[in-house]
Length: 221
Image (cartoon, rainbow, N blue to C red):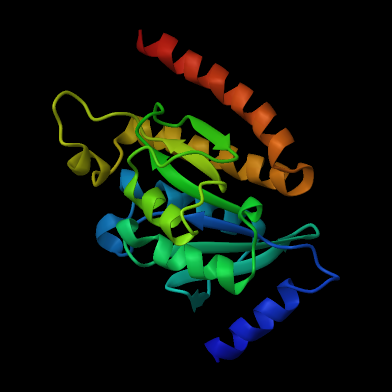
């Protein structure tokens, strides 16, 4: 049944009458053990967007939990790779190939220690910044970095804390509130992107997030 569903999915999403779909890929680790941890905010963004648009994450394809739907007239594919973070590209690469998507229709959501907790950035391309999930995605997209990414700030580890331990911890109450707000903001910019395009959406959104960054720095000073 799932195999039939997947064939129909590609036929419906890849015709001349339908715009080329967007592929949103959230990075994280599968299983209850990792739910709610800093490293899983990419999964959380996928879930937040799916819930806001009434898209069911009810298929398994290319080692990912997948949902598909339309936002107004724009077809969207949502994916949460189940490979564990460091092998995320083993899912993202085959998904992009299966739907014959160019890199400019792919957006990867991921945690970023280089941004304060709850601050977002939307970029058209970039490096991996030491993020193993992004490294894997880049490798499986033929080592091409020209795909967009939504960076979700989680802040830096305190003191001498091991970054790996920090990533696998859950948020405290204050950080959780900031992340929940960021997820709502992320849903908003993704909806805007589907109607206005990446460049225009990123320009306005990143300016807003820059001011948010400044406000957080002022509060912490």
